[in-house]
Each structure stands twice: as structure tokens, then as C-alpha cells.
Image (cartoon, rainbow, N blue to C red; front, side, top):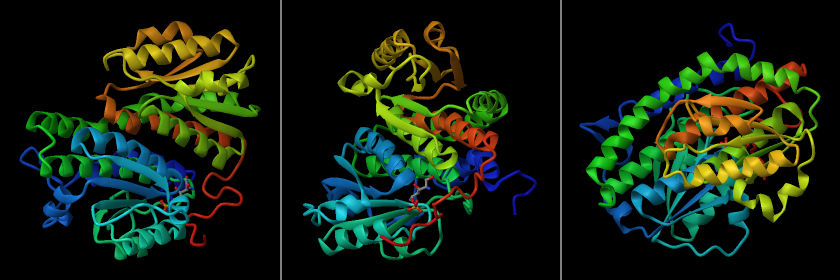
Length: 369
Ligand code: M6R
């Protein structure tokens, strides 16, 4: 039931604040993250020496964001791999490896087969999943459910923000268990986490109309590029995937630092480029590097659409459009900066008269390899 919305996707984007809130609900006690499902697993978390995250599509991008959180808070090395690539190489995995799979449906065949292969090689497996009782969680040693609620539209939106949220929870939990996380950092992170739903709501309330208008103007666009750095890089990839899936426009995401290593050759006058701008408060280094990327592409005629923190004045002289997101600590920025990109992809497809819930050639759950 679309509940009065024009599409399931519109409803699910509107539910993004709720997906984050419900995933956190019941998992914060006395200023600490407590994940009841992981009770009795402390020894396992203390004993593992590395994490491999396995997933496909949008879930893989959530995993890429999770790497930053797990490495920073839990001080554990993390590799993030496409599940289908993991399965057919001679992976070095053993009992000291924790394999974290991420899947909205819990039925993605590529991810399931990779999890089974990891278990066969002796790894411990933990599933982050949105569907109670699905196959992947049933095949795993541990489960952390996301509570985004059923996701019907083929393009994943609210499940994505819930997956990143679950990875934050896992990273904070494992960080505490391993003694890698100070109480102070833990408390600050929980405050940030609990503030996210309201901040997403702010974007929906204040920016959605403008973004849809922008998408409307861009219906004849043939190619869109997305640039991001650090945690903004996986969001650039997600923004490009969503635009491809929904509007059938050619879209690519790049690491902003790669620009000079090739992609800048694509820039010609009028080329739209979304740039994920890190907060200027993050020691300013990343911010100034991304601003100089913007200058470089603008000098070559790019049309820059910046996704930037509210109040970031440095970006104004260089951007054709600025999509605002509320302030958040660096690791939490992706949950906010992805929202304008979801709205944009949906808005552009809608403006083109396309079916946003059921894009051509795609299935909600890919149950074949
Ligand atoms: O159900 P899963 O999370 O395992 O699905 C993984 C991908 O197939 C999925 O995220 C896909 O990329 C979506 N269509 C993205 O919008």
C-alpha cells in the first residue's frame, strides 16, 4: 500500500528518517551501544583480526561507508568486496576473519554463495539484513537486523541509510568490546546517531522541492558525473547507480582524488557534476581539496551541483547549485548527503515519466547468479 504516495519509492524516501530511528531504537542503553542479538559474542569480536564486508549494489556502497567507521572506532582492518568477485578467487580467509554480509532482501544469490564460501573456509559470518528470517541471516553465525520496514521499490533507498546505521552500531559495539573506543568518543557518536533522523527530515522538508525542480530542468541531460572523497566517495557511487537505475541516464561516480588521473578528460562545457563537499570543520584538508577539484572542473565548463553543509560559504562562489545538508560529524555525513541524491534520481525519472518503482530490466531481489 503506497499510503497516498505517488510511488513506493516516494514513500520509502519519506521513510528514511524512520528507517534510521528504528534501526537505532532499543540499541542504546546508558550511553552505550548494546546490540542484544550479539550477546555472548564478545570473545569472537576480541579474537578476530580482520573484517571482510561482502555485498552487491547499493548494499556494497553501504559497506564501503562502514569500512571508515569500523576502522576508526574498532581499529580493525576492513576489506569491502563485491560478493560475486569474492567467491571466485582464492580468498585468504580463516577463523580469524569476520565476514559481514549486507543485504536488504537477504536472498541475493551472489551474496549468499559468498557467505557460504567464507563459512566453508572457516570464517565467522555476521549478516546485516532487512528481512526477518531470510536465507542469508539463517546461514550466518550472527544477525543484526536493519529495521527499515519492507522496501518495495526496486531501487534501494531507506534500506541503504538503515544499513549504514547498522554498520555504525556494529562498529561502536565492536570498538567498545575490543577496548578501542574511548567512552567520550562513544557518547559523542551516540548523540550524532540519535540526531540523524531529524536532520534527514530537515532535508526532506527544506530541500526536496528545490531538488525536484532541478531534476525537472535536467530531463534532457545525457550524462551526469558524481565526485566524492573519503566517505563521500561511496555516496558518489550510490548517486550514480540510482540515477542509472531510475532515469537510464549515463552516470558515473568517481573518487575526487582520481580526477587528474583520468576522469577530468570527460569534463566539457555544460557537463553536470555533483560534488559531495566534506564539512569545512573536518580539519579543513579534505574540504579544501574538494573545493580545488571544483575549481578545476569549473574552469573547464562543468556545471557544478554541490552537496554541502549548511553555512559552508566557501562553496558558494564555485557552485552553480548548492544542495544543503545539516551539520554532522564527518563519519555521519553520508546518511545525510545521500538523501538529495535519492530525491534527485527519483525526481528526474518522474519528470521523464518513468516508472520509479519498477525500472526496466531490474528485479528487486537478484536470486540468480
Ligand atoms: O537485497 P540486497 O541488498 O542484497 O540487494 C543488493 C542489490 O541487488 C541492490 O542493492 C541493487 O543494487 C538495488 N537495485 C540498488 O538500488
